[in-house]
Length: 198
Image 1: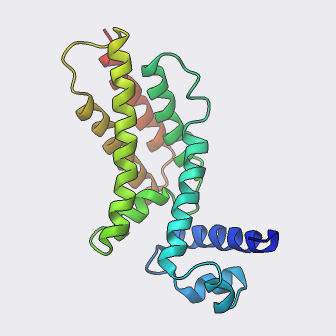
Image 2: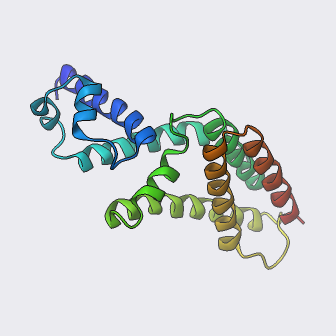
Image 3: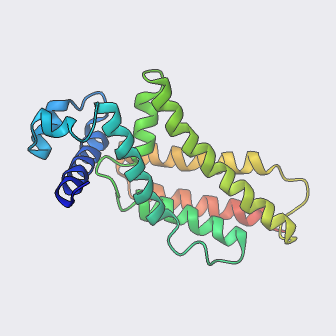
């Protein structure tokens, strides 16, 4: 792809990410994308065959943005429980609290909108949440191997609880824009993680 073509593709993805994040997938029309990108239909369809294909590229881009915020300064942390705490803090205070995406949490918005409307797209988003839970489970297993955890903990239940709490906080924050919600959720989850230690 030429440099100009790559710039056009990036422009489509960036403008569509803003549109999908604020208006939702179904409320964003091809005309909205054309207006935002200043392209003709032919110019758009030269890069993407459909609105769903645009959405998939947007989703991949959103994941990369999310990862750059959520895992910042996380990997070098040796203590897996501290790694979990830092990741949670990054999600709540740096991703959600600093409104990385205009419409709030892109993934929660999309999951709520697309569930029951598009099984393939909804499952695609849900797979990301499951993967995030599995990462927490692996870090809990690492903590257990290092002798840091109380006995007989169910790692899957703990990881799923963290994901559910993060998504609940995201939903409440997006609907109220109360700045205290991410901080309160972070403090409560830090306390919860602390209770898992021996």
